[in-house]
Amino acid sequence: MTGSAEEEQVNTVSDDAAALDAAANGGSGTPTSGTPANGAAANGAAASGGPTTGGPATGGPTTGNPATGDPATGGRAPAEARTPGAAGAAEAGGGAGRLIGVGLGPGDPSLMTVRAVEAIAEADVVAYHSARHGRSIARSIAARHLRADHVEEALVYPVTTESTDHPGGYRGALEDFYAEASARLAAHLDAGRTVAVLAEGDPFFYGSYMHMHKRLAHRYPTEVVPGVTSVSAAAARLGTPLSEAEEALTVLPGTLPEEELTARLASSDAVAVMKLGRTFPKVRRALERSGRLAEARYVERATMEGERTGRVADVDPDSVPYFSVAVLPSKVGATARERGEDAPGEVVVVGTGPAGPLWLTPETRGALATADDVVGYTTYLDRVPRRDGQRRHGSDNRVEAERAEFALELARRGRRVAVVSGGDPGVFAMATAVLEAAEQDAYADVPVRVLPGVTAANAAAARVGAPLGHDYAVLSLSDRLKPWEVIAGRLRAAAAADLVLALYNPGSRSRTWQVGKAREVLLEHRAPDTPVVVARDVGGDGERIRTVPLAELDPDQVDMRTLLLIGSSQTRTFRGADGSARVWTPRRYPEV
Image (cartoon, rainbow, N blue to C red; front, top):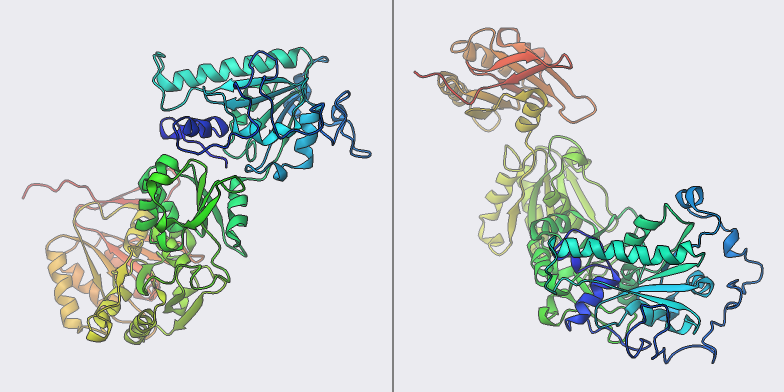
């Protein structure tokens, strides 16, 4: 399987050599069949203990002509006639050899492509990475296709668990290795030889070959032969689709920081996590924290001897080799057991932010991706991407209590339910309605989580600058759930305290007078030229943001999709470089 343990210490991509790093320390259970008895020869001679699984007596492959390097494929153009890489073609000398990065697939030699076998047959030199013990997984996969007259170059990697006295530390030792290895290959290429660099999996998918490619491809004609990746092999071994329909597949290295892993796991559809081994405990914690452990599947040494599959939750962390992958497969058409639905149901209340998908937090995106049912006001549901197999329950904006109980009832039956609000679900939104219903004895055993979202006040403030940079109050002008006298009293108190105000629900078709009344109350305490931000449909197609003096605030320009930000006595404005109004409130307040 492709991946890199090396990145636990440095941010450098590697594959085969890092895998052998794990093998050198007893972690990967590296297969040894087909490897040289005394390690691969680095001086150009084939190792004395050649493969025991080779082809004909001569060691030559049965699919090509060793004498000429031309594949016996019935009409395929000779390799020399193929178009080299653009950079290599421009700069290669007339006598230069060819560089071929050969993807070998995930481990089973029978999964090598026809072109990979041909490329090895065409090569004069076969290079592969190994640790100091001399065993190379890449060589073992290709062993049956190696000839006695192949010059073998073992590129012996410094491994992460070794100590080094290099003045640049491990990173410096690694850079020296890349320079030395590429120089060795360049000497063969300059002599006109074709060099095949073997890469487990795919050369450009976390492969060690990439480091040679970056140093040599601009100097020599180059070809890269793709291979079957470990991710594809893992999905095949699980017997389940990896991603389907509009699902996005995310591939993560297990070497990422735990917080980053958790966030990406929470926000993704289908996922493959590579580079396990020593990183497995961290990856398992991230899966648990993201709420996705129940659906995570484990594949060890896919297509290799000792292959094992199962649930990540059941795996002993001490037994995990480097050659393993954690998979969160497609949810489209999956059975309840495949989706991990032996876990209890729950309700997650999420906020979509003020507009479309760009405003979703990773945590909310993940909750929506893993929900069986999505419940909410139809307008807000339209902001949520549709997913095959997921049930959507839209309703009118005036039935919040009924919507909350419906969601809890679904969860009580074992469903995972996302209740959708606009903005932040805890700010004048559905979180309160759900928790009020959840207080009933009937739903005492139903878990309820609330995930934060970008609220309209913060979104509108960001559009104009920082009007909420100091103390501020948030009020709703809707008198449907509280009398106007209470609203007016709170407006006076906030205005008298010289707080910036964020006013939600300022008006609607049936509530047309509240904005005018609020302006009157505020003018009792604020100067007529106090800046007011009138923000409508922030983030939407109809976004319009204006800054006007308080005395000129026009109620006819305000509706339910509008939010008002009323400045304090300290709030300032100026024209930005683009000509738009910039509004900000200093964090310092004058001494009283």
